[in-house]
Length: 123
Length: 111
Image (cartoon, rainbow over all chains, first blue to last red; front, side, top):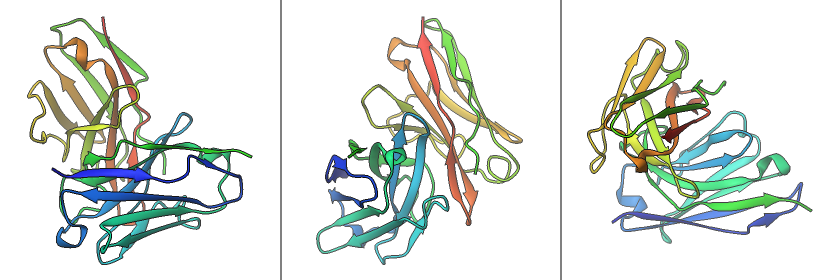
């Protein structure tokens, strides 16, 4: 059974870089034709797609975050990661990793989600 | 891009049917059949209920159904149950420049 698990610091200082990792179990990232996504949810802005990555490393980002976001994949560890630079309090949110229901879809119904990890931006 | 527009709240009694609307534009809902619906209980991750406008993932009750007309998508829940009380979000693909957008969410109260 496919499971996703987010990990990373729960507190980040303003102007620093937020780094999170999603560990995939129950399936191999490199043997699946799926994109793997990061989505966040904040009280003020609801759900927001951050970006998605393919096992080959091809990544696509939300234009509103593109200048600050990098998503990478490590197939040897069966993980993909998120880096968000120059964070502000507006980046405080629950961050989820997720996978679409449909292969090769960058943004589609996400049918597998991690439990989410809360990241607070504060000094 | 702007979020899709959903009513802030809807309510219904057990056994009744309710619908939640999700209004977009000709650049998202109106252009693609990639509308999805999620159910989210407090403190939990969203759960996919409908994808590709009207498709249910395995394990989702057939009390949940989706449809689309023009720039508006709808989620209908029939035979309301207490456990259906949750927040519901819609989303749509928006093309290869912006990829996707979510609605602001609708709180469903089962009276």
